[in-house]
Image (cartoon, rainbow, N blue to C red; front, side, top):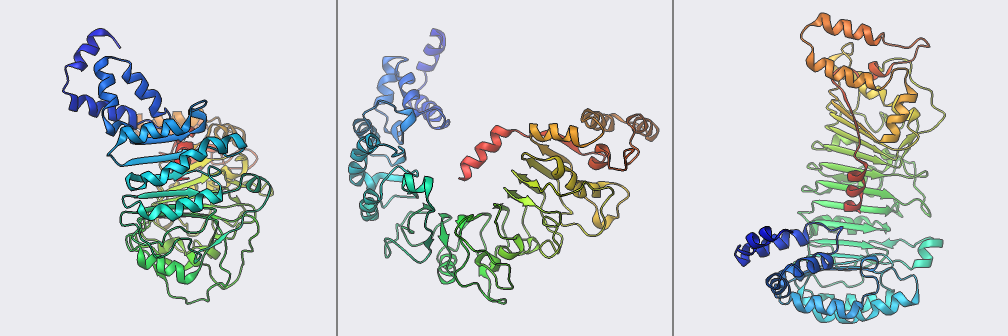
Length: 490
């Protein structure tokens, strides 16, 4: 920082300078607050005094092993808690307990936490950070955390999680029932029993859960404004529900993410239904479903997409799709409102043959605007998805017309596209540009003849240009942003 810049900033009122420092410290989570505070404190004596004596700069307490290597965690944590007084604090603890030395480092931190619970606004303890005995003591003290808004507790014995199956928790097993924290709005629980009754929450995330109809209905009733629900490693119901079971209403739910247990579970293909099959969520906007090789079929665990009239984004992740799975009309029976379809780490099985002509009949996504293809092994997947885009061709009937405008693919998938079709991918870019710059039908027809848009290749397969159709833009997916989104939702 130049001397002139420092002089100019130092003339700002402390209130404005403090707001600038708060924004710089709290806005970028990839850089630890300690490093930013040290850098700002070294600018001048005035900045040092402002940093040390401003409690609002010390409220983001991130105790992360790989960013605090060699630091005395007990003294470091106490200093941050004292300097943040009397402000509410957000505590994020991530010290993997792989060795006994890690346990010795983190034990003093857990010993002091109960003394500060009344000031904790957000408490996140990552997986493998705390042993069960320490967690039990912490849970007993949590009712004093009257300002707690967000609770994230994830427990798993390190060696057991690496080499053994993890037992699921029944939804009606509550560790600390009878106490409702007045400000708690978000609860994430993994590998442990539900800590507090699910009441008045707007966001719930549960891992390794055996659902229970009565408890699920009670959750919906006691959280009438629930907006986000995440169920990871979900087990099937022990006693599936009969057809005709009344729906469970979640009128404010906008985001639903479901991942199914891959081992130790027996998913049924039967007329009986699972817990989410009776979900009524008229305002659901985003649906994310994660599969696995032994996953249940979508039609066995979720209502038809048409029952979600506000559904905007559908994300299918880690699915191996047979030819008739994605477009199974027993599930996609009616057209849905989906505009963005995302297929992530999803592929077709190798037994499929590429399509040789345009599809016919009704389509499940008539309003689709974008496709996202982020995966490996896309040689057959891209060909299969031609059925979606082919409906944007002028020769299709208006009742099955698509309006796809953009397709996002990973760099690997882009390379696979080049191998899967006879025409080079650059033709698509030229096609998009020529369409935007075209002033006459004759010029457009000439350009199409130059690109050889004859409909099929010499061996009878569909060309890339026909697959895409006019006005469809092909874009390379920003994989870094995609990973960030997964981390934020985890």
